[in-house]
Amino acid sequence: MSRVIAGENPLKNLFSALTEHTFQVDLGVADPPLIDYLSDLLVRFVRVDAIFGVRNAVGRRLDEVADMLMEAEQRSERPRREVHRHIGDFTLFWVGIYPEALERLQHGERKDSLLNYCEQGKRSYYIASTLVDEDHREQAPVLRRLSEEFELCTVGLNRVRREWQRLPDAA
Picture 1 (cartoon, rainbow, N blue to C red):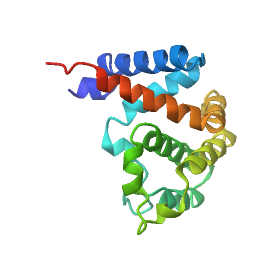
Picture 2 (tube, one colour):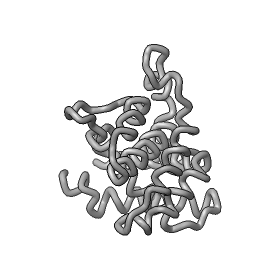
Picture 3 (tube, helix red, strand yellow):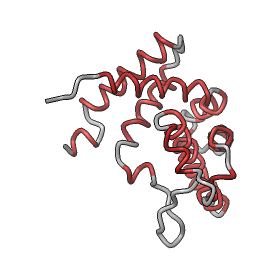
């Protein structure tokens, strides 16, 4: 089981095939780096600890975008970039894959009730794309594209989810 969750072969292959087919065939988006990023996001976010991977200075898990934004502003450039990239991933995942969870995530008593996840995801991907060092130069154009095409990516990810739900259960 850990081999699959780590992203080796079966699960990665499944998400790659579904994402590639959805974006290239259904949506007409032929952008391999973007498609690879999205399928990798799905593999990473199979694990709940990756979805809620941002922690504050004392190690408390941050499960609201508002708290992640405050944490990002307290960090130096490279860690700040990673928090903004994660905010983009987090919002894209929920809006695209599980939009029905947004009501709970943005319930009136939570700080996130004041945020628009689409706008914040676009903004965070844009910020992450501008905080570039040598190690992340290749990823900057993908992050910029995610910022510019956030809504299209949510539509595509929602279609990917529908496709995996149609698959017969593995026995």
